[in-house]
Length: 128
Image (cartoon, rainbow, N blue to C red; front, side):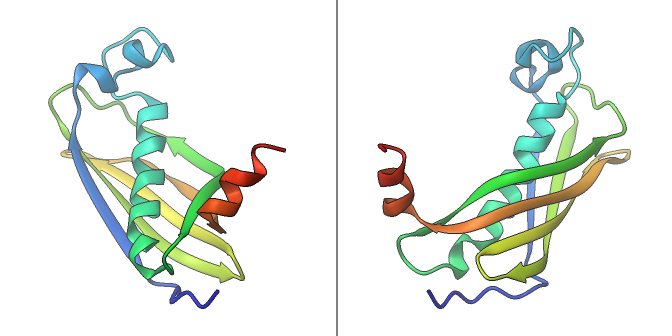
């Protein structure tokens, strides 16, 4: 498994917050602001997408840990940008620094751990 992963690989994803992204829609709250689970999902996806091109065919990453703080609410209609940076590679264990910003400033930050796995083997192991 000779992947080309080194610290410093970065990713960036931008979305516009819609009603489907709100705390009310996620049932994680009752207000129409960007949901914490939606922000975490955006951040995780940004990390995943940033390194996928560096992996050998048949390999993927799976998320195993998130340590995220959501520090500011974002209304529907505003853009949110998530950024990831691969900060540590330890065999198949990858650690990312994550942040999220809306048009007015930072709304979240933290770290995220993913593991590189063979997709076929991973799915086969679920059958046991």
